[in-house]
Length: 179
Image 1: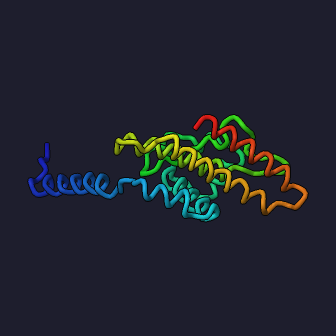
Image 2: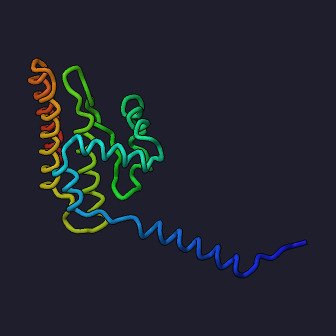
Image 3: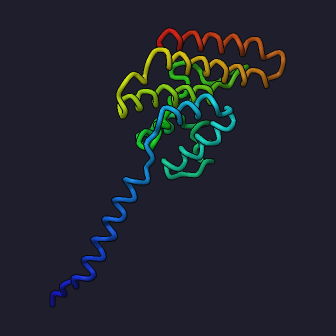
C-alpha cells in the first residue's frame, strides 16, 4: 500500500530546505579590501598564524592539530580545493619552489601570509572588479613578507640572524621581481 505524504509534511520539508539554502548563502560574508588589509598589515604574524590555522581547519573540516601535521609532513594538503572555496582563499604552496625552512630560518608562515595576500588580491579583483590586484599592492604585500621574515630571524640565536636575514633579503628580491 502506497502512503502519500501529507501536505503539511511536504510544506514543512520545503521550508526547511529553503531555510538551509538561504542561510548557507546569506551567512557567507563578502570579503573586502579593508578586511584583507587588516589581516595582512594590522595583525601580528603570531595572531595571523593562529587565525589561519583555525580557518584552514574549519574549511577542511579537521582539527587545527591536523593542519599543523600537514604543515610538517604533507604541505601539499594545504593547497587543497576546499581551502580556496571559503570567504578567503586560504590555500598555500608555502614558499613555492624555494625552501620553506632551513638550519637558520623558518619562513613557512611569512610565505603563507604572502600567499594569502596575493591570492586574495586576485580574488577580490575577480569579485569586485576595478584595480585591486595591482603591482603596487603586490609590492606592499611583498614588503610585509620581508617584515615577517625579518621578525622570524630576530628571534633566532644571534649567530643565525645574519644568514637568516640574507635569505630573507634574497626571497624578498625574488618575489619583488615578479610582483
